[in-house]
Length: 492
Image 1: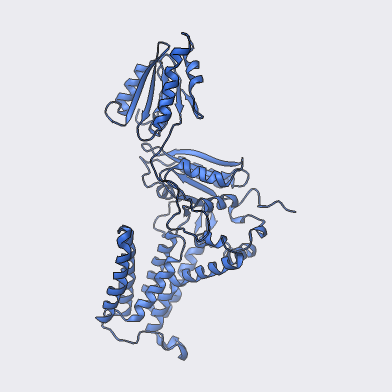
Image 2 (image 1 turned 135 degrees about the horizontal axis):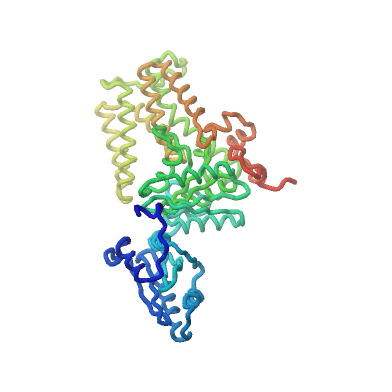
């Protein structure tokens, strides 16, 4: 047998053969965290296998106590297996005839109980994964709203979602990915709403993943199911907020949960899903629309502000007379395009450094960079002040983008436009902007147009993107997800 997916091993009737298998193939007696507790129940040997660190010790102790007390309250019987089954005080007890399944479940944090003379084992869920408690995600904070976010435990994450959608048609379909890691991956959807064709595609793609393990969790899953290559623009949306995931599930999206990851994958998504934020739906429609427009402006600024400014610097005749003040007033020996790239990469250095810098020091580092490095660079003539200004504004626009992946993709697009403008001036800007637009329009994720509802144009969907409508007025689910049930609220 090369791996557990190629050959299924039945459970031997002798517990000594099970113990031999555990020693030879699983490392019993070598790996310190794999343990076994041997009991004699009504003169029948019983073995309990578990992994320290993934199980609830008190639950195991209580189970062992109940099993040992069988000797005090039961007479000798030939049906020891049935007696033990009735004494397993746990809400989740399953039986299996496959030894591979027992090993997989034990290594997942459950316990396996084998009884001598029986070819069936008990698998009991007493998992207690190490991890943190739910807390608000750092990248998706809101002024008003829930403070609980997803964590690295898939069981807690599904519980946070179930708490918000108490529908009997909510499904968490479990799969295991990775020949060695056997990571839990769950597809979450509403049975009577989600698109069955997309669901079948996701099942097929996930089950076809053939890899040792997925230590990078959801990102690895994304790369396998989308095969995105070098395209920087995200085709799925990540979120760490349980309320955001629940809102998309109710719309008809399918959400992918991966154990060990505090974020989930939402699919299908378009460009405009990445520029929406929970804050818009925690305020009044007017306030939410204002915030949304401001965010759209920030996204456009992050892409086009620097290329446009560089264009008018290189070709001042494009500016009307009243705007002739735009452009550097001081002359330097370094070309403006080099200054822009140095400043832009400088901001990127600061962002990366802030991630790797302890929190108490990151604020001080930011002050030093802003107050000293920036000012000294201007004083020595490395930068003109206008470069610092426009690079900073473009950087702020980047940070207003809710999706981290989209903000980085927009930065790559901005740098590409800057190079085209530097070499070809006005034609470079026009051609670059057109190519970017056509590239985004042509993109599809799971046969979903990336620029929907702008292209292909759908008036109702486009209006819903531009204006944050009140929830009572949102009667229909988005057509882009192909929901089986279009109505979010029963028609009157």
